[in-house]
Image 1 (tube, protein in one colour):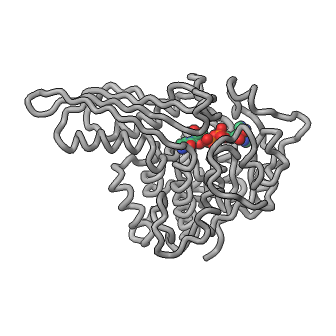
Image 2 (cartoon, rainbow, N blue to C red):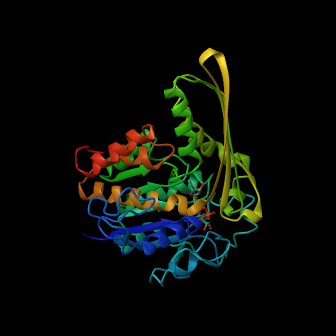
Image 3 (cartoon, rainbow, N blue to C red):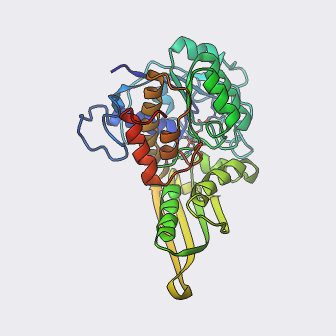
Length: 357
Ligand SMILES: NC(=O)c1ccc[n+]([C@@H]2O[C@H](COP(=O)([O-])OP(=O)(O)OC[C@H]3O[C@@H](n4cnc5c(N)ncnc54)[C@H](O)[C@@H]3O)[C@@H](O)[C@H]2O)c1
């Protein structure tokens, strides 16, 4: 099969885990079970078919470096589970816009003497087919700006963060008109807080429990969590995480879900506490308390490997506009919310060509 030519915006922990993952599983055989991938062979594409051809960041310590080095540059602090060779791709400077909030500005060094490049031109010259958006939470203007550059350059978009593009009809039309697919929004980790929370709530609903209220608290020690202590940047993140759980309950309930604090020594570890209260037969109370303890970035990397492969299949099949099945499977705030098992079935059908999008 052909390679999947990928451009990245935001060379942070998630980009690191994704690139390491493509390297770690490069020799995965046809039938091998790879934890975190729907299939090693996804519609003919394997992890080794991911080829990173362009990357954009603003951090002066990353700009100008080879992508294979930049992913291991501070403040990135996720685990190193694979060595990565030099990739022959230089990280280019993009415009800062609203990418850096008040807590990131002191830790992300920006060199004003480094001029931002012409992003559309770099995308075109690199031959990128799709752009993966890993900008920090709250980068509303920058996300729209990069989505527009992707369209100009003829690239599909895989939107891994919660500034809504794939789930917004006006943006769906823009990609549709450009003949390009779009997947998103806000990647849902393999065994992360959202899929665990929505699955537990759905179990209670399916078993006839009246769910009464629920909250989900999250802490971590990376730049993602540092950025997210700025509550004003969290509007879409809270909505993204909350909507995924809300969609599992057929009646309104009080929910409080989102990032809760930054604990620096946790580094890329994420701790999540979920509490659900309900009543079952005889109006009897039930309380579920769950704690999840994971390394955050590898938790989304396999999902993104599947998402880019689904988007590449859409490009091959000339499918344009929002990709419903992979978005419902791999993202928290898709164009259409589905229970996890149905979303997975839809993706299987999409791979087999039995479902258009
Ligand atoms: N499991 C997960 O880790 C997970 C799950 C869901 C969503 N996400 C989202 O994915 C995104 C990336 O997460 P991360 O952990 O890699 O964050 P990160 O902070 O490690 O990386 C963000 C990168 O973006 C760069 N950046 C900032 N402004 C920029 C600009 N204007 N142009 C180009 N680059 C810019 C930063 O310098 C940094 O390298 C976040 O929005 C996060 O919330 C992550």
